[in-house]
Length: 431
Image 1 (cartoon, rainbow, N blue to C red):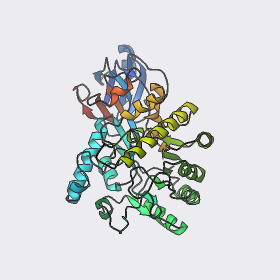
Image 2: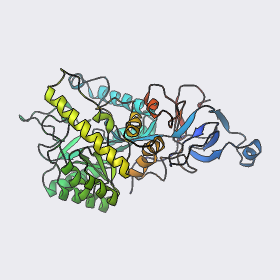
Image 3: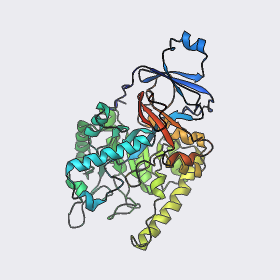
Image 4: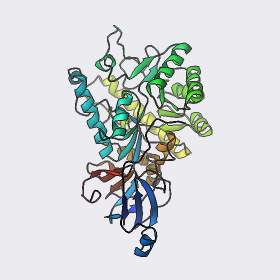
């Protein structure tokens, strides 16, 4: 897999973070009173706290020392499913009045909120152009490294078709700044579209093989891109740069079309059955269950009761299905669908997984190394291991004792991204 995601270090010099309990993302048990050394943006050492003699022998005597006693240190987290172009504090009517610059600044704010929550790498699954990925990489704005779908693929009338019955388009579909959709109905349209997305700079191709809970014109039970088109996209991307294909798939049949078509990961997966779980295990398909959005229930009176009842049914069905997938050992990565749910509370997904039977240690693994592997970036990211980029998170929360607390405002106290301090609420990391 050849990713466009920049993996170059930003930090310079040497820093020793000492005294923290390290959860390295690999499923290894926690290391109390550990030391992590950062050398020019990469991890140069991780292990027990070294003696003064060992530090001198390693040539690290001049390194700046961060005393992290009482903290827990984890890798930077990975959110595999965000929509950064959907801000926390503005709805469609307000956004419709914005100039493009206002929309861009709002997106930059969402990216900053995500980074401050401890997410150093994120996969945006429709809405952002590569300009945002380039701006983060160049240091013009602060945010997670971005892995982009650019747009999602849907058949006419499917989950990703924004047109109303009268042909009217919502504001996001009218703007070149958020090119989040492509309608494809034939094999020729599929090939032409994925080639154009690859040319534009997509890192992942997203297809909709089912309808959606948040759509006005369709339903999760409706079918979308068929299996043969999924397989065509998978083959084309393997032929080009071996980029992954992921599928919005909520219903049983939509999941089946995506899995059998060869999608690398399934977004949502609420209609999973036992036979589909077995098939995903056999194929190594990753599940990104977006539990945060599944638990988002509209307030009574804000939408028709029928819509609330439908969401409650899918919440109950989906949580039971995901719990069975957790128990069966399906590979699970964390994704929030942030934008639908608020940016900056991304780590709530870990707690949702634990509620469904995953151990806290595995939840941290799902939120770090599994995400990096899903994007083909685990050589550089996802764990606190020598040689990898220094994406690090410091928190006073013990994730193994109270994983839900990681999502609380201010729980993440410091964040390094490629060795550069980007958040330091306690003033200990930047020096």
